Length: 293
Ligand code: NAD
Figure 1 (tube, helix red, strand yellow):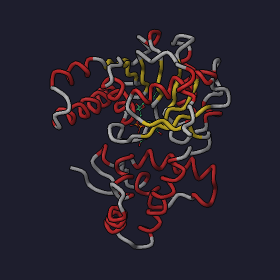
Figure 2 (cartoon, rainbow, N blue to C red; figure 1 turned 180 degrees about the vertical axis):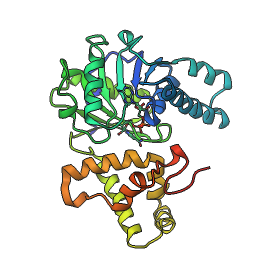
Figure 3 (tube, rainbow, N blue to C red; figure 1 turned 90 degrees about the vertical axis):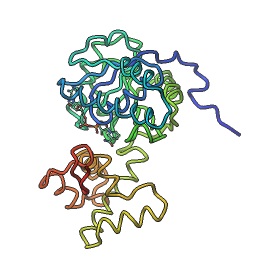
Figure 4 (cartoon, protein in one colour; figure 1 turned 180 degrees about the horizontal axis):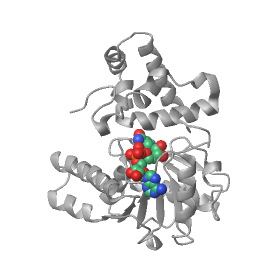
């Protein structure tokens, strides 16, 4: 018997306009996705250089569609016009949903969330794309925590089909339903998961990346590890994946999991050194575990 999900019974008002805060790897990808489905997006960051990066990421995703003849050049151009940048909150009054995708830092996110709440309509939903932070901590300063919900996309947004939907302690069923409805319209699969550190996917994925780093420390080459996992049937190996995710981002999440789960998720030294000693970021900077031309 097929259960009726929350989204099936509440008939939420569809999201027609949205804003994304943080124009990084994820913000750029999420803006692209929304715009590709006809939803105008306001993309906010602290600096114009970052907005340019987010725009470039979105444009690159459209370029890939044009290249694969899944979209006409003119349509891609038009879709790019649906994304507009801002370094302040201009236009936020009009949006039905804001997706926060700034750096994975509790204090930064808390201050952004408190700030954005003052700039939007009462009925607008605030979603966070956090990978690992607790919804309880994130929603602490909000006046209306009932409209605050986790909407966790995966990287790269154009290829990854899943979105984790997370309720905070006070999140309303309406807010959850709205996000589930939007997720489906974006062509992704929503799953409602518990609010624990790392939620469902990262709680499994990060220890997998971390364990691979331990294996590298023990002397197995990363090419061998990656090849073995590809041969096993995964689309890419753990080091290629860490480069895709961003070593800085992966490390931040790994540390949060370590502080929640203790010894069993202790971060491998190679993971720390890659970012802290050698400043490797992964694909986005061209240098990670691999060199990316
Ligand atoms: P990123 O470092 O590429 O981008 C973060 C952006 O946030 C930067 O452009 C930065 O300028 C901006 N920013 C920082 N403070 C801000 C503020 N106060 N106001 C507005 N913008 C601000 O990071 P990312 O990889 O896009 O990750 C963003 C979020 O998405 C994090 O919470 C991360 O955990 C989560 N996430 C990342 C991945 C991934 O694989 N990279 C996957 C899923 C979720």
